[in-house]
Amino acid sequence: MKTALIVVVVLLSLHLSLGSELKDGTGCELPKGSKIPVLIEHIGDDEIRVGLSKDLVQSKVELQLRKNGLNSVTADLHSPYYCYVNIGVVGNAFTISVDFDRRVTYEVNGLKFTRIASVYHKEGAGDGANGKYIINALLDSIDMLSNEIQKSFVDVPEKQAAK
Image (tube, rainbow, N blue to C red):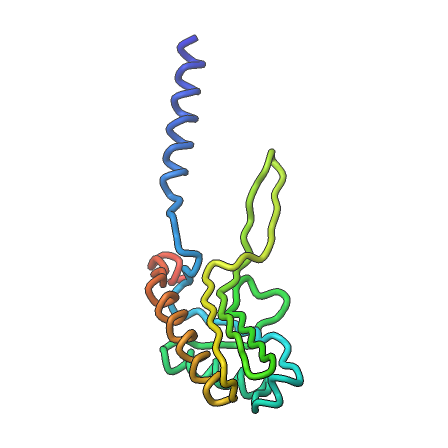
């Protein structure tokens, strides 16, 4: 009986000590110096009509991230996290959406699942759609995301950095 009680106490304390390692986060946590993959959604005819192109939007976003002290790369299907940008133009109106998406894993009844989830989302809309105005509004949203990422940087412990 004493042995069983000791085993239960040890297991319980182990569980509690492991659980204390988990921290509630923003979802934007990254090691300092991480590169931010950037994914630009399809730019269609209406966006092109107001002077936007995928290359223009990609380069403006990447430049703004660099101005804010963040390095960027083009996202691919295997990126564990990325900045997702979507611009929509209909007639004279437009929408902008900037997300920070990341792969999250969770467990249900012993089964592990994974999916991409948006952990940061900022959107806006306006009228009088023209490319320059839309780009300026987009860069304001990129500034806000950059700030959130920088506030969430995690230092790499010295033991891990030495490896």
